[in-house]
Length: 288
Length: 157
Image (cartoon, rainbow over all chains, first blue to last red; front, side):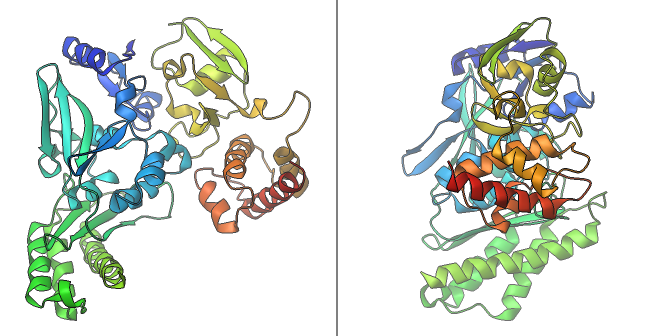
């Protein structure tokens, strides 16, 4: 096994081009588990911790650009106001020890259907910046996940960071697990309301081969809020519409039975999470 | 490969480190610092909690190579040799130590909590120690120990 430790982004990209098989490692909270249990023995490890650019974030053109190496702890403390949905998801990651090391870039690289950041990124309409020596491109997050633990990266590309608008409205995240800490989600759900555009964003976690958006549910809820003039009046949505939103989210999921839960349970729980997160988000919206 | 880092204030080195080796293995087997315990090796139990560059981390989830030239503090470095840190004393006095395997990780995690939040509530303690498992299930005593240590550290800094 070889260990590569670039100290600049340029050097990291050169190494990835020269050694496409290299496995990038950021916080190590996924990679080390595989190494410790000898499940995977990569030929080359590419440690990105010394690339300072990756752990920076800054506002740019009305959006935020967050480097792939910013830890969950820093997202919570430094970006909690601007990216509330992602910060909520980050608080549900592992434990303080894991949040201090784990990164959204690593979550995206692992591309687990259960990754906690993914529903929040989907709901908020994030895009992922990936780079190689050939250049950079932005991939909408709903096109980034291709299958279980597979993403849209080309062999010479690295995840540079992600782009998000500072939240224009309430955002929520909820996760089902056996305890509050240290759980891989049985299922999870992210919701983002955009009162400016009068749109709704959703993200479903751990209930399909990839993290998923519930497109029909998004359109239904946005229409229901628009038709009843709810954005302006702040009046609550009728019970039937809230139920329908939950049903549409459950229907968008493509869950399986596995050790953490059954497909039927996941669908049922997602309908509850969708209604519940909307109730919280609407409460926040009308309280403003 | 050769790894050099500062551990508990002292520069330590080891040769022929396997690139896939965890920092936990490096500390215990190469440097002879057995305080951080090797239990789950997947970040679930917190028994290997240490400081890396001032951040509380699981040493089992860090590659030794990632610690190159970095600053590390283990449970061995919290107090002067032969002395107990007030947190360690509080754990002993309260009966928060049963089999003792989880204790070093809990001591370091408690240390991290109290330097950020000198007077934590029960809920804050549970949240901060959520990544540290005690399978003797002595949590009530552990929480009592954190309160005792907090009180002493606040009144006599």
